[in-house]
Image (tube, one colour):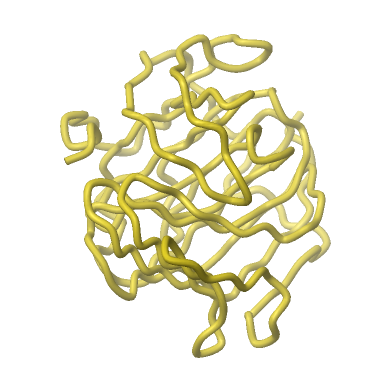
Length: 245
């Protein structure tokens, strides 16, 4: 089982973040094999110490202009298939299947977003509950981006990849609002260096990090000890957001 099982941090109403500095980011990290075309070999995980508290100025952040709305009824995202993974369209949803253990695969929107609010519906269709899936944020390239993910057995995490080094900004934490093997709505508010995270319309956590100020968004699915994670995404929306002052 992954190390998240060992980390018994149950999220209640307190919003905690990790904001150590590594050029505006974290000082803890470990090696990660180079990513190629939206795939990532997964390293062992490590927790980071608790730091300061970030309280969002307004919850939820006010939504501005609708920048992206995709119900996946038309094929706009990458479609691919090989022995290790598949990604494409079925039942007017976009899906990613990972057929090898310890790997992540993702797809990108091919856009650029700075301060935004992102929301997407997710559902696990098959595979082990010890998985991870969610959204990629402010993607620079396949070696530099943020990721907010959940697992079907009730955990979430916020990480970043910087020059192929993975940092746990929020290590795996348990949340009772995650619905195992059911549909889950993920929402992220990324306003300047401030990130706020909602699951099924419930505020669960927040963090501060300033490494990446803008970039692409994406959808990601990963496996751990068992292969076969199959997750679908629907009703992706992105709005502009005002900076917190």
